[in-house]
Length: 114
Image 1: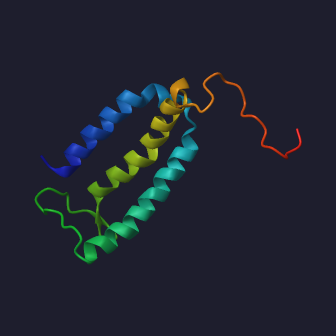
Image 2: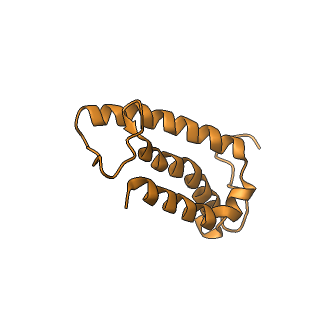
């Protein structure tokens, strides 16, 4: 199985699982985050490949590169930019993760006016 097939399967599964949350999130910030992370991926993956930190098997990739990074490598950036906010939204709504589970605001710090 090539990397692009694996990436598409994983991105599709993540999208299906998180679709209810994705519908509630604003799309424009997610797109901008994905573009920003992809730009960082293009620059830093190119540098890491150039210095030999990792090598891709030519038989497993399409051969399409952005700068020096293979196209398949951008799936991880897209997944992070889109699905970390989904996790943040889901985990942030849990009462267990709240520092004040009763919904009351934190008490004012000493010496600060009310």
